[in-house]
Amino acid sequence: MAKDNQVSITVVRRLPKYYRYLTELKEKGISRISSQELSVLTGFTASQIRQDFNNFGGFGQQGYGYNVEDLHRELKKILGLDSNYNAVIVGAGNLGQAIANYKGFEDAGFKVLSLFDRNPRVIGLKIRDIEIRDIETIDSFIKENNVQIGIITTPKESAQSVADIYVKNGIKGIWNFAPTDLVVPDNVVVEHVRLNESLFVLSYFLRAMNE
Amino acid sequence: MAKDNQVSITVVRRLPKYYRYLTELKEKGISRISSQELSVLTGFTASQIRQDFNNFGGFGQQGYGYNVEDLHRELKKILGLDSNYNAVIVGAGNLGQAIANYKGFEDAGFKVLSLFDRNPRVIGLKIRDIEIRDIETIDSFIKENNVQIGIITTPKESAQSVADIYVKNGIKGIWNFAPTDLVVPDNVVVEHVRLNESLFVLSYFLRAMNE
DNA sequence: TAGATTGTTAATCGATTAACAATC
DNA sequence: TAGATTGTTAATCGATTAACAATC
Image (cartoon, rainbow over all chains, first blue to last red):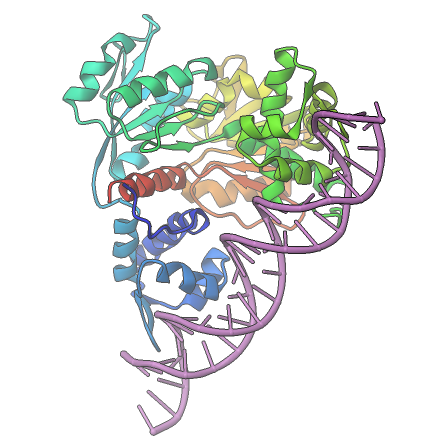
């Protein structure tokens, strides 16, 4: 299913940073940038930046550099940010609510349609205008609302069963905040946000710094 | 200041996963594990696992494997999780509150002493027993409470100025959730949680999968 | 002792950097 | 045209994997 024209994951993980700086440049009205200038902003080498872009075709012009608006548009397309996505969240605790509340995702094209939980005390509440629904009703909701992304903000014990629900209902992208690994079919993408692990890495370097 | 005996960052970022599985094994009462078995759990190769551990000294025993409890304790020490840390959060919005509310961090030895904000409407409120204080009072609070970790959950516009406050007050570890880069002195460690970038990578693979 | 599995060296693979011809 | 900067190939560097002697 996926193209064999595989770009390495280390390259892909740099793309959002390029996109972020290009958005800023565009907002500032800067129309042109060289790999050397982007290197100063991002901290990547100019050579690496040119290599990265050339994974997707030549966006630049010799002697000139890159047109900010063009490059921004290309990266937007590459990252899939030129379409809109519908998402749901299972786990209406603080983290789930925080994500539902964050306007930034909606601005980027990711709309949270509903939260789901099994706790009767939160079912029926609203976060902004997003309702918390009973987890028992999720199957029909996903089918009827063209949901492409499933977010997991439950405790780790429930995460795999939530993933199973998502997969069963045809969701192909899972954003997992629970501190556990998930087993899903090959055609389903899982992106983890590992808050614990991030904090532990900070702790490691904090200690390493003081030795 | 840092030891020159540098372990590469790619290795360091794998350590929390080892630690997580060793914690599980320990809870299950399993006392012994081979690199081959750990490979099945983690998805890393057995060879890589042995290489990783040997960055920190030989924890295993030929013909036997690794003692779960010993290895768990060593990793805990390496990650700096055998001490406790005091943290504060600037930015008492949903994300800041969610982090303050998360018991898991406290269990791992990271205690949030206070949230800070400049919005008078939230100052004085409590999340669990953690008070939201006026950002104007942060300097003395940090000095009087032995705070080692500063967490940033403000909008990106304020993040650098918060980092400056942390640095000025001697904080050496910053956990940044704002979608921006930070400039800090060499002896200060910054760990970023880039929610936007994570979501964009999910979006990338979602698209790549369907082409 | 025989079997198992580590610790470690050597080989391979992939990612980054350097260099420069192409060309705007 | 001359100067600048890309796109791309080649060189280097670092990380992963393979292999196996050491040894429990």
